[in-house]
Image (cartoon, rainbow over all chains, first blue to last red; front, side):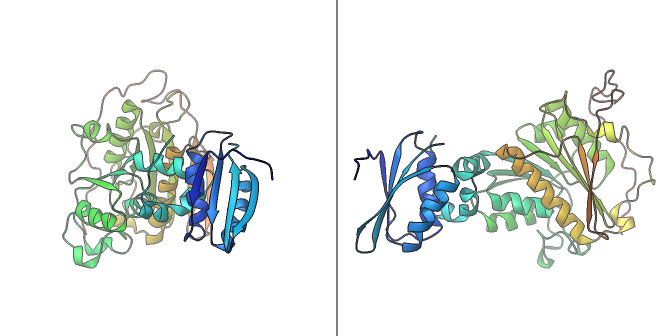
Length: 80
Length: 272
């Protein structure tokens, strides 16, 4: 796995849709273009929905990884 | 850019924040914006309701009237228990219950040439939901002189009209007087007290007024500038008529004659 520099990490354990995306988006909006956000999720539908919505907004989804039992990370680069 | 929303605000405005055209940035703009609504009646009820729900941070309401039973067929901010209460207070109660983020400023007074500039000057956008021509002309001229965007709507019987005058750009926007140079002679145009009005027409046109205001604040879409939208409730048809800037306009034309505020006589003052 390539080594990606993470600029910001957001722990969204316990959050569900659509607030996983809403909270991720709010953080990303406050980051600079090119910076990378890592989001930690434990709500399975969000593992599909957050990357999908991020792509729809024109952001670059770098990785989606399962990192534990019922635990995932989504890594997004801010493009715009 | 940075913003700090509470958990409650993130939930309250999530459907806005999800929209690419709004986001946290747009919601922040809404919370920082100031909109003045003149008239808490048939048009003001829906526009105020949606502006408050949207989180427009400061909302001014001008109305000198009290709630009457005859208002309740369309003026959804008010209710039966509030008959006799000043409309601005009734409106404030309803809107504060809906969204405590919004600061409501009330003006329980009749708008006139001595107070209009003072009331309007601190707001970003003005919505005209008044019910008489003298007030409409006064609001228009004041917004023109102060360079404030004016979202104007009118309703009668089964018809509604809507247009936006963006007086921040006076060169490129027609004005209300390009459309109506002077108030009509008394008695020519009936008031809704005389002619009647289907309540939902106010709901539709007032909601569209709020839409125009939100677009102006968010700087998205195309404002209804230089276009008059006409709605017919009987056929459920919307038509758009192009408005042109009139070179001979007494306010914004080449040789303006209206250079200060004019208070016209109330052309008709029937109370049923």
